[in-house]
Amino acid sequence: MVIKKFMKEDYYEILGVSKGASAAEIKKAYRKKAIEFHPDKNPGDSKAEEMFKKAAEAYEVLSDPDKKAKYDQFGHAAFEGGAGFGGGGMNMEDIFSQFGDIFGSAFGGGFGGFGGFGGGQRRVKGSNLRIRVKLTLEEVANGVEKKVKVRRKIQTDGVTYKTCPTCNGTGQVTKITNTILGRMQTATTCSTCGGAGQVIDNRPAGADAQGLKTVEETVSIKIPPGVEDGMQLKVSGKGNGAPGNGISGDLLVAIETEEHKSLKREGDNLHYDLYISLSEAVLGGSKEIDTVGGKVRIKLDPGIQSGKILRLRGKGISNINGYGAGDLLVHVNVWTPKELTREQREFFEKMRDDENFTPKPQKSDKSFFEKVKDMFS
Image (cartoon, rainbow, N blue to C red; front, side, top):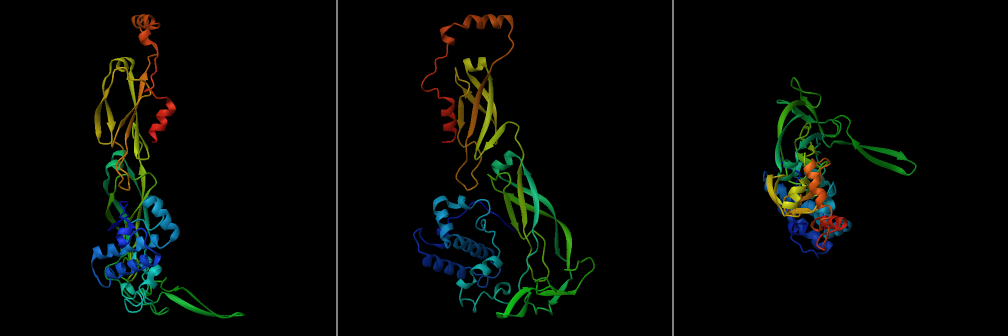
C-alpha cells in the first residue's frame, strides 16, 4: 500500500544535483537514477520502486522551468492541492508514458520490461474509489490511523484470460482513412477488450463480464498530522481491480474535520476564548484550558487586561510539510456582570472615582490593531 505523503524530500537531493544545475545536468541525473532503480533491474524490490517514483516526481518538477521556479521560491508548498504528483502517487504507467524517451536503449530499445509498456500489451488501470473520513481536531493535530471498510472489485479466483483477437493484445485498433489530404492513420481503444488487450477465457460463477467480483475489505489509512478540511489523500492500489494483467485503481480519501467545542483553527494556529471574572482579572490566579494534547493550566497575572492574548508556543497544529507546530492563542475576556447585589453596587459606587480604578493604559498595552498584527506575524 502506498499512501499519499506530505513529508517531502528535497527534489535536488533526490536527483543528487545542486540548485544551480542546468537542464541537461538535471536530465542526466534523472536518467542515471531511473536506470539504477528501474523495475527490470530490481524485480520485487519495493524500495527501489519507491526511489524510481521519487526520481520521476523530482524530474517532473525540475525539468519544467515554470514549476522549477515556483519550487525554488516556495518549496513543496507551491504544489499543494494537486500540482505535481503528490509524493509517490505516480504509477509506473504515468512514468513510462511521460519519460520513456529519456531511457533511450538502456532497456532494449525502450521501456519494454515493466508490464510491456514499450509497444506491447497495455496495462489497464481499474477505476478509483472515493470515501470521506471525519476527524476530530485532536486527530488532525496528532495524526491517526483509521480503518475503513471498502467495497471494491477484485479478480475472481479461477478466472483466466486470453489475448484479444481484435487487437492482438495491444489494446488499440488502428484505422486508416482516405481523405483529400491523403491516407490518415488513427488509433482508438479496442472496443472488444476495452483497452485491456485480453478477454475472458474462463469465467467462474459469480464473476462479472470482466472477471471481477465485489468484496468488502478493511483498509488501513495512515493520516499524517496537519491535514486540512477538504484535503484529499490517496491510498494506491485499493480501488477497483482491472481485468487481465491490469492494475488496481486508487482509494481517494477526502478529509472532513469536526468542529471543536472550544478551539478554533486558523492555519497551524489555534484560538481559545478564555472568560474570567472581574475578581480574577484584578487578583490574578490560574485557569485550566483545553489544548489538542489535553487540558493545561495557565497563569493569570494580577491586573490582566481584557483583550490580552497569551501565546502558548508549539501548542497548535503540526505543519503538514514538517515545519514545526503552530501556537495556541488564548484570548482573555473579562466578564462584566450585568446584575449586582446591593453590597456589590455600593462597593463599585465607591470605586467609581477611585484613582486606582481609573484607566491608565501604558505603552506596553497594545491596541486592538497591534494585537491583530502580532497574531499574524
